[in-house]
Each structure stands twice: as structure tokens, then as C-alpha cells.
Image 1 (cartoon, one colour):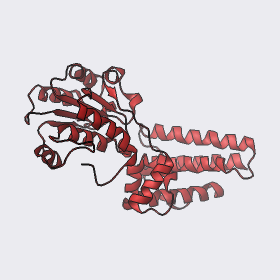
Image 2 (cartoon, one colour):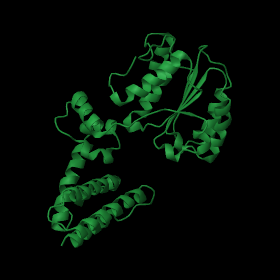
Image 3 (cartoon, rainbow, N blue to C red):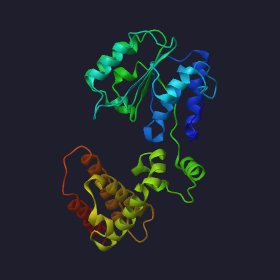
Image 4 (spheres, rainbow, N blue to C red):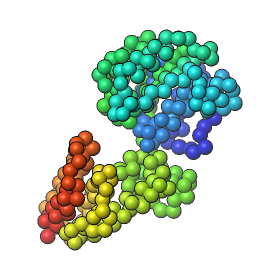
Length: 307
């Protein structure tokens, strides 16, 4: 049984893992390096449900057995899920998980653990998980989903089988949005801001996409006039990073369609775009700043290099 919302880029990795479950060849720990915005959490949940199912098939869990009903109700006693407490997965959370795994499976079958965004484990919590990764106990499957595999501690990654996954390209995402969400135009220009297709699809209904579209329009006007325009004058602090990411996309598009700018000006715009993105990364981890002044600064820098 698969979800009503079909994510075609997950078909191949899911089928591969399901085949291993049916043949009983799947290892005890699987690292799922698929961002949540691309369906990584859904994939982990579907794999977990298939592993717990009493009558799994090639297309996943049957959806009809007692185990599937418990999973669907959110109270399967042998399904353990761990999410970050704040910004980190803490050692007490992992200790509680490890203690829970010392008991036998209440339904007499598999025990499944899903750790979401496992790169958020700190050194202590990762070390606490190591013994369980090495000796998980009988009929135990650990699914470690991660947004950024490169940030995962090597001691954890080396003890897991790695899921083979190819991220969808923009055309696949564009086709999916048109088929699943009746989108009549290509909106994938804003994928770097949304972070992935699921968030982009949600943005159509919650107003985020309309806000990003307005940012693009107002950044273009601001860069041409030399001063902030429209929605950028009323920018809220919680939206500063996404607004700057839209600016980055506007600057990069200016390089792709340079018009009358010479090579030196284009190189300066590329450098400015890089500074904008570095500022985005900085803002995600620092205290608040005078963000309107920051936006105006970038607008003035653009005017200077294009005059």
C-alpha cells in the first residue's frame, strides 16, 4: 500500500528496498539520504510499514493486516520514531530508544526504528546509538533518514547500508507538479528557496509561493531603481533568509541573460550573488541584524557594478 500522493522519484529506491524485505536480505540499518522536502520521511515511513506488515508485497505494506492498522492509527508498539528535540537529537532520547529495544517485539515480528534528520544527533547521542547499530538485536530494523548525509558522523554512516537514490531533476518535478497539483506553469525556478518539491507544492496553498513571486518582482524593481521597493520595505525578520535566496536567484538569472553588461560587470554580479548566499548561511545561525539595511546594501552594490 502506497500513499495517495505519488512521488515518482522514490519508486526505484522503494522497490529495491521492498525486494530486499521480501527476500529477507535487507541489513539491520539503512541510511536514507533523502531530504524531507523530497519525501525522505515518507519513504522511511513506507519502508517501516512494509517491514512491519504481516503480508507485504512488491508495492509495499498490504494496508489490511493488524500491523498495518496499528501503523495507520499511529500506535504500533514496535514502531519507534525519534525526532530532534529542538535543534538536536539528545542523548536521553537515544538512551530511551535503546532501552525500549531491549524488550521483545510486542507483536511478535519486526521492531522498526525511524530516526528523522539523524544528522542532528550530537556526539554524545551518536555514541549512545553505536552499540545498538552494531548489535541491534533480533528482528530489528533501524532506518536513519538524513537531510544532509555529509553532516552525519562517519561512525554512524559506516555502520549502515546506504540507500541508492538519485534526486529528481527540475523537469521531473515540473511534470509532477503539473500532474498532481494542476500547476499550469513552470514554478521550479524557486526550488532552491523551497528546498524540495513537497514544500514547493505546499507553498501553492499556504501563500508562500505568492510571497516568493512578489519578492522576485520587487527585487528586480529595486535593483533597477537603486532603492528597496514594494514588499521588501515591509519584510519580516522571519522571511529575510528566503527573501535573500530569491535575490540570489534574480542575480544569477541576470548572469544567464546578461543583455548589455560586459564580462567584468557579470563577474561582479556573480561575486555579489555569492556574498548574498554566504549571508543567508550566516543569518541562519546568528542573532538578528538590521535586515532592511542589509537588503539596501545589496541593492546599492548591484547598482555600483552595473553603472
